[in-house]
Length: 350
Image (cartoon, rainbow, N blue to C red; front, top):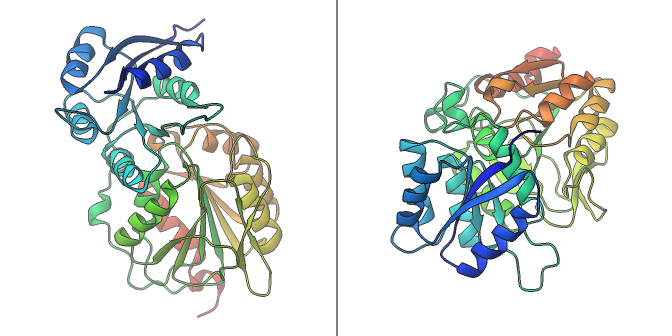
């Protein structure tokens, strides 16, 4: 049996430290080896204890979580899971942390929440197993800040559907910054807490040439627009063959997720068939693998992120093993490959 994942819990609240510690220690495959109330204590504890994973609060005295995370990634890169308030401000800070190199994020529980930090232990175990490195984009050999969309792209008739989870913030930025202003209609499900997806859509909209927005029920899919599934209690589907549109549906979680990548991919397979491209990026678990297989069986072209550039080679691995992935590519090549598969010249429309 593998040794338990060793965790350092960093939070300025003794109550929150105690809650996180109790939840993690209830899993036999996780062991909290230390606690710290601020960055100064945490720095000493990391040197002394050499933990596998750190959980890190964003708002702390002396040095905030973002500043401390940047120092960790610069001086001693290791898996860090951010613990954030479920507010717009907290979401913005958490997204910045994920871009700096945090492994994943969890939201602080609301008063009376029945199962706080529900999947934190699973994230810690995945983080401990991962070969975590600073920045997915850096490991893929690209610089998202300098990525330039192609200028001679002529959009065809295809819809693009993308699914991602852990590591998906950096991965999506790397892919979408290659998209031109007239990109194909693109729908995305990224596993993310409620309130975070709106901030993430706004962030993508500032960074990318196309318009990026949080999907709303009934929104028509248009060239030059990217639609991100809102986190919360609904799944994103694409419906109406004559005028493809977003539909947000209230259903139970699928594969433990809501929104679920499988639900999105299933709808695109049924609606668009061969007039679609499916892409599965880094993430824990298997969500999206079966749906991507349905897309391929329906005639869609399918792409998976390769193991070397994934923060967690989970979802793409399962999809590859099922035969759902037509080709695997490193992250730095995926945006270009999507454009090749959706360009008008590839469909004989010139």
